[in-house]
Image 1 (tube, rainbow, N blue to C red):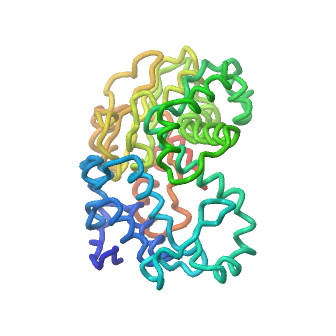
Image 2 (cartoon, helix red, strand yellow; image 1 turned 90 degrees about the vertical axis):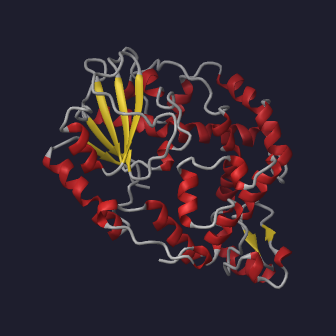
Length: 364
């Protein structure tokens, strides 16, 4: 496939495994031709390889050409500037400044009234939801500043009694005060002073924070759900969980404490290690070797391995450099949607089958 700017993306061999990001760019380019070129320009990178280098943490903010908060948010917004109906980018229009945002959702753009009218029968079904997406896309920055998530409490209900997020929120003491503290925080103020959009009402921002908190905790709690479904009790034994197919989604800017909600979920547990394994694992705090000994009692220990799972199994699990997993989890691997991904995953799937490991995959 060709990447933006005319550069040809080298085809990966089967041994290197599937590249989820590359497939994502191909799908995006098919839907909006030229958009990947815009993204590369805004990130100040010249090629897909430069982009991957950035995802691996080998570029600083200044390397992206970002000098101010306003510039950062503007560059992000520019990557959404294309006509939702005809898919044209600004530089393909007679007047590049003619794109106008939908006033209701503040999310999608149109090159003129004709395109907006033609798209309205479809857009009206999603306009309200897209408004929430537009807000969340900006407020998500507070995850990177550390404002989100707020400090959480030890669960006061057994895991089986927590049926959904409202049950989870009901266990959080002083919830409104925690939300108010984020609303009044320095970075929330900086965000809306530089976002180029009006600040939403506090009620809307509270709901956005709640959605982003649930998104942040969804992976550790999915692991907890998997343990519960398979009848694996962290209170009676030390556990190891392998996250297979991990990428920058699970590992970019991940902190050592990001899965500590498992400790709130299972108070008194004997120790848990979560190992991120994947070819797209990025450098960061959790880029440290897996444990060869049991995880510390009462703690969740994050580690990672950059490479294919069956290689990790051979080099680490079989040689006792890493523990055999009690549970294997894959977050949205996309096997059902792409034959290339399925072919690349086949050695891992066969290994999981042959060793009869408890496996939980999530699907969008």
